Image 1 (tube, rainbow, N blue to C red):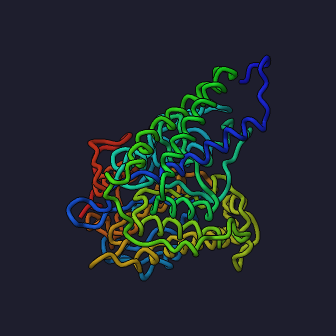
Image 2: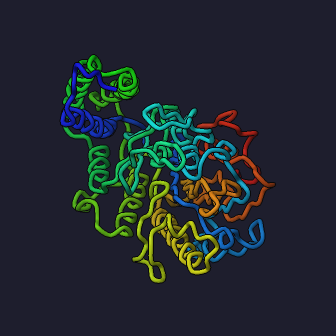
Image 3: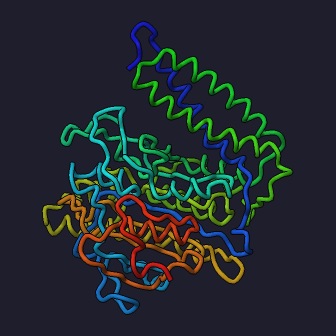
Length: 446
């Protein structure tokens, strides 16, 4: 709440928000190493989130181990089967209560239960798996991590369930109350990558001056805010302070031995946000591939849509309507057919990214060989908001650490957090435990 005696205009707040959105660009000045230190290519990790679940009866393959048959929804991955893990019967126990959607998405990478709230006191009560890796290894690359999405953050309150809609827009959390900002414009992402891969002149020093001004403005603004807004501003300032060390090192390029692993063609910059949803998605996946190929970052997340999205999928033959509405199929055969087509389209986009990484040669291997690309949703059947037996795929071999080419089926309600323990190990940032994990997920690590 803002003190009534000191009103702050919306224009002033938007100016502050603009500075905050620009700040991740400053991370692009971070120097780092370009390899693992032993000559091997670096391992990368991304998480792609699909909202609104899947058609439950057309997802799970037939058979287990290496001799399995892809389901109708997973058929677009046929040529990538040897680079794929299909994981059955995983769930996030922290999402079992509450409402239909918001607890599922916001706890997807934290494996925690978010605090139910209508307003500013959001809290996921954990740290997302990707940010555990970023905190341990983020200084090795210019960008610690890259958070991408398709739609702006949804605001307001879902009165049907009593949760703020903000939860439905985030899977990456740098702290319990700090969901990371996502970029939705592929042009801005591209410019950030170009800037990161080839810093010029004294831009880092200029950014240090900008950072000083932002902090001074924020401190003055803090005096005019109520308690809740001061808390949110303090969280923001903690991120600002964490950038100071990176910028200081960036201002001394002679001390950096990081070099991009591939050149970026500055002439390939996207025009902006396309009107067509399918093109928008492909461009954002291209940005992940470019970031991994150049080693500008090794950690990324991407939301195909905010949870509860009713993105119109009528551009697909055989589909007429919005995603969320169709996911509430009520076992209607026509809606189930449309639901399957939407699910299959999402899998096709996953396959597109995997093939793109597979085509990027890296010595005797490929970028896909040295990556882990998680694909999944925080619920299974969108009609029942079912958190059991989540649709989870893992593409890539993680630098040889992932035993790809299998369908692994576990006992009912095995911990999703165990998969994250295995992925963090393969990434080179091992942890003894994560959230409610009980250990590594059997069969995942080679």
